[in-house]
Length: 193
Image (cartoon, rainbow, N blue to C red):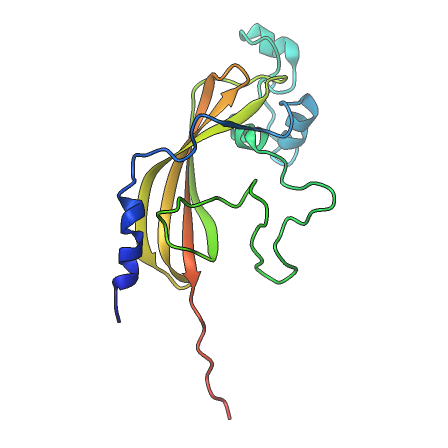
């Protein structure tokens, strides 16, 4: 079996260390809101007064409630859905995401891939984020590209690093996301006749 498919990824691997996102910020749909923080905490039953009691947050040096660190990516994402638009490309099972808010774009150096899914996410939190701040995501630095053949198809685990920033462009967190981009395996039909 030929391994030439791996060579298709060499141009992207040569770009490791380069940024593909520029300095433009993609802003979250809404500022960090007290009600959204409460809803984020509910299923976790995360009982920390820094997130629920303004006086307690102030007693610890903050000017407002603190958003849970694990919620920052949610607040930095644009809207996933808008009225009149479907989130998925079709009604079929395993349909891919249609909108650019989620579907990541590979640089033109990468081969075309039909499918993708996220495999890893790492975050470095640089300072607490407060209710009322508006967050956005900036940059897409390529930090890794590892080719692999899996049961779902041939492709590569691609890792990008981005920054979460405030309206004042202060970096409050760094995010590294790894996705597996692939060409699906075509299942062989067995003759059952």
